[in-house]
Image (cartoon, rainbow, N blue to C red):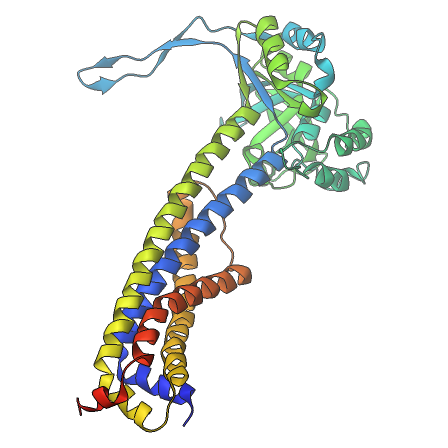
Length: 422
């Protein structure tokens, strides 16, 4: 009988202790896998958003507000001193000293339009070419005049280590968008709007009493744009009876071309009545928060692993003491100290492999089904072979380290003394 068979038979006889050790290891590995899986998925999702969301800076009107409570009930916020952005603000940005950093400027006006059955729909007035450059996920269905646009926009989604857009690809895409020029009497429908109304390209839609032609329909993207109707900015200002007014200005900025701080300072000085949000700074803040979560998760994982190592070591040591007579018989039959050591270590390795595998399964399942809830993000955690290998490797390392002292104890037992217990 080989050492391998002796080890397996012993594990079968001592199922309770084996399950106890297995549980300790599996919990430790599951903790590491779930924390790492969620954090890694969050980082990937944030990177994807940074790649897809081409906006770096958002400018909105500055507004003051007061919140009141009456009888313990919080009343809606009352807004006052609401400033408005206008076309002149866009022209002011065009005249900035750091204008070379701004690669795309997309002013927009948002309002509500009414359909025939009095259903309200969001109307977005924008420079549609700039809007499509800024948001690479916006695609038109079946537009032959934009043959290379999708390919170039996919390139534009590439993100460098510092999460900046590929502006060379944007410049190429800009050339392909030259033929994309709806008139003021034409609109672009979001996929959900077109589907609910049963409209196709070239159809007519009556919006707030005005008949408009459907220039094109957006491909479904799963974003808010699916629910919106797009038209030229000037046409929207006239349609909504809000001349020169702008709801927001979104910009894609190349931070390699200059200093972010100087650009933000210039915008603040030029538009003192506006609220300026740097999404890059928001991303950096989220990255810092994520790193804190990583450090906390690592500390918890190490603590759980140390507890698991202690459980394995104590259980294996107790098992060695219980098997004093068995070990004495093995030694009397001619087993050397190395055989006894290998047998104990092999037990630890076999249990560790099973614990690592179970921990990987449990940790991945926890991350897949609990991760989106705890992270409050739409994240997807895949089954990763590399993480399985790491899980089993860490478990085996923990099992070996925990089994060294029990194996040393078993190997140094005197066979004569051990046989006295028979």
